[in-house]
Amino acid sequence: MENKIVKIASEFCYVKTIEGDILPCKARGLFKKKGYRPLVGDRVNFKKISADQGVIEEIMPRKNELQRPYVANIDQVVVVIAAKAPDPNYKLLDRILVLSYFNKAKSLICVNKLDLDNNKGLEIQDKYKSIGYDCVALSVKDKTGLSNLREKLSDKTSVLAGTSGVGKSSIINAIEPGFSLKTDEVSKKTGRGKHTTRQVTLFELGENTYVADTPGFSKLNFKGIDYQELDRSFPEIKEYSAMCKFNDCLHDKEPGCEVKEKIGSEIYEDRYNNYLEFLNELKKGAAYHG
Image 1 (tube, rainbow, N blue to C red):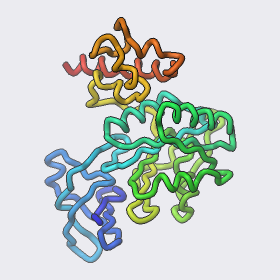
Image 2 (cartoon, one colour):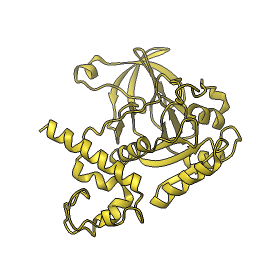
Image 3 (spheres, rainbow, N blue to C red):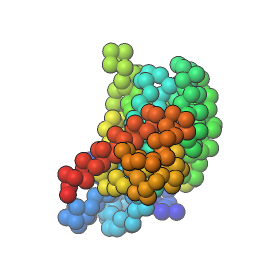
């Protein structure tokens, strides 16, 4: 049992206490001076200053920290992708999988909206399962696959990530209707979802089981990742990289690259192209920062 920040709004951090209460707390100014801000998911120690308010005095060491959404101590990133409406964004999916790997968080791919295109949804699931990722396919509308997802969320702190409109809030509502999170339809004009979640909040689904709904996003950067280690975050590329002629092969223009030999057979071409795009992005960042 621990005291955990489950929501941050305005100047208050809402702490779920060991006793099970939710206590609004202010963070000591010392944290701000040190440039260290509290995050949803932080484990904290606090002191009560009144019956209904406290002050956070200590933030315990974090095992990981995500940015955009800002959340700490995550066990699992659930990447939600829709079979349709909006169309699948594979580049963002792969980007989040990379970030999950380097933040030492387990990845779970959740394919939603099977009711709109069952074949496409199962195709996405089968593709990423063949690579080695844990996947679940469901339809909130038809109420299928929800029990499987809930089982995979059990005894973990998970964050739901993905573009607006894929159904993150709807999934939480379907698992626990009492939360009644606001949802919106995908815009017919743009084919994209509206941002209905404005802040990160941890919702308690059961003992030691939390899930965070997060604001929709379309851009995440790879700050802090070494481009020479990127291939580790692509399981199928990592598998064949040991067979390359050179130990420091980046699987780009080097001769004797076993990874490039497997493109189109053992490695999906779009995954490899995303790897190259991420690699070049990281190399440019490394050059810029010296």
